[in-house]
Each structure stands twice: as structure tokens, then as C-alpha cells.
Amino acid sequence: MLHLGADIGIDLGTANIIVYVKGKGIVLKEPSVVAIDNSSGKVIAVGSKARRMLGRTPGNIVAIRPLRDGVIADYNVTEKMLRYFIGKANGNKLLFKPRVMVCIPSGVTGVEERAVKQATIQAGARQSFVIEEPLAAALGAGLDIAQPGGTMVVDIGGGTTDVAVLSLGGIVISRSLRVGGDKFDEAIVKYIRKEFNLAIGERTGEEIKIEIANACPNETPALEMQVRGRDLLNGLPKEITVNSQQTHNAIFENLSLVVKTVKEVLEETPPELASDIMDKGIVLTGGGALLQGIDKLIARETGLNVLIAEDPLSCVAIGTGRALTMLNVLNSQQNVRLFRRPVKRSINVG
Image (cartoon, rainbow, N blue to C red; front, side):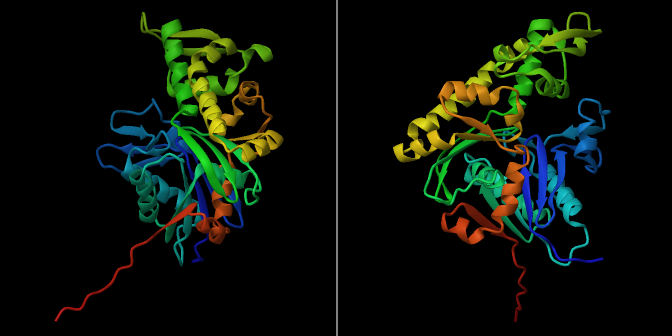
């Protein structure tokens, strides 16, 4: 059955893609992974099925993460992934193509922004809009950013951390740091390789982060986890025990960069807005907000109250969907930028 294309908001994340459909809410949460047959170029699997193939594929199949550090690293694979998710979220038999709002990190270049817009159009959108992540995160967290008061959002995603101060419906000051959950995973993998001579995959690194990693290990009981991998000395399978203090040591440098960026934005915030932030505190969004102790670490380093949004992982996707209902307000601040599908015109000669 044919039906009208709905408005769709997409959190095009380095680690996960989350899709919001107007009137339905969040309809999809899947990893940003695509499995492709090298010989034919055919897509074998997308999302959760493809993620299970990471590090386990035969020679002719490769599992790809087409987004790195918050931007498109493989344009063609990103387009195929978007096409799959847009079709799955809104139905493949559409009378009209949907309008799609996609979030981008606040520090992307013009070339990177255009790549996102074009990939979305090629994937089947009638109109492609982009919105900066901290603004979408604030909308998704239910913050009232239209008032003349300062609101600070720290969105810690898979590829980037975006820190911004918002007021009157726009971004007053922002910083984008290409450090996020993926960098935490990589740091844990490298630490275990160096300290234990054990090779583990990125999926295992992520599992360690989720289970026992702690930004403030001294303030909570220590946790331990059994980790299996390949011994680098003899090449045989091996099991070790890792604790939360060790994972903290592994990600400490990346955590310090996040805290440093938050402080830099606070230092450049106008005094009146800084006063508002002292009253309201800092709001954390993104999957990185779920890292144990991250709120306590930022609170300790800044002296401000730090709140974690109710559903931090979905905030950006929800915000992109809500932004489509606020285009008039957001366009006045140039916070949303439109990219239309090219119109085909026939030319008569003679």
C-alpha cells in the first residue's frame, strides 16, 4: 500500500544510527555498520547483523563503519546505509519521498556538510536538512532554548564531543572535539595490548567500557571483568582480569580532552550567560553520558551541577525530529540548512 512520506529525523552517529519518525517517535536504533561483498559490491547486512560480523568475516566479505569522527569516511557505503534505514523506517513504497533532518557535529567543514546532504538526497529524501548536534541534543532533552538565557549542552557521541552554549534559539559559542566513545574503545584496546600483551577487538573494547569503565573510579566500588583475547607472545587464546581503575587509566587522556574543551567554552561564555549556566547546570547527552562517573568528573572539574538527560542516547534523534516542526524559528537563526532534490527539466531543441 502506498502512503505519504513522513518527516524523518536521523542521528547519523559514528557508532549508531537512531531514526525518529514524526508521529511515531524513535523507530530504529542500530549500529552504523555495513557488511559488503567485496567481489560484487552487494550489501550483505546493515546495522546489528553487520555489527556481529565485525572481525569475523571471511575474505570476500568486509564489515565497514562508513562514518569516522562524526563525518562520512565512505560516501557510497553511507548512502547505501541511509537508503536502507530510511526505507525501513518509513516503508519502501512511498507516494512522496520524505523530508529528512540529519544532525552534524558543530565543527564540520562545508565539504563534510555537503556530503551529508547529498548522501541523504541520494538515499531517497525529498528535502535534506542539517542541524548541529548540540542544538538537536538540547531540543531532544526538552530544554527551552528559545528564551534569552544561557543553556550549556555537552553531547558525547561515538565520534565527536560537541560542547555548546545556547540562547534565544541559537548557538552562542561551541566547540567540537573529535573524541568520543570510539576513542575510549580504542584507548582500552591499546592499553590491554600494552599492559597485558593481549590482542582484543574493538567490540570487546566497547564491552569493557560499558561494563566497568569509570571516569571517577575512586568514588565508587571497584569492578572487575574477565577479558579474552589472543596472547601476543605465543599466539594462543588467553583470559585476563581487568578492573575499573585500569580502564580509567586507559581513557584518562581522552577524558582530560573532554574536560578541557568544556572549560574552554565556559571561559569564552559571556558573563550573563555564564551566570545562567551556574543556576541551570550543564546537561550531558549522547551515549558517552552513560559512561559511569562522567557527570561527577565534569562537576568536580568545573564546580557546576551536571545533569544527565533522561534518554541521552536518543536526545539528538528526537531533537532532529522536533526541529522539523520548528523550521520557521530555526531558519531565522540559520541553525537549519536546506538541500533540495534537483528538479529534472526537459529542454526542447529546435
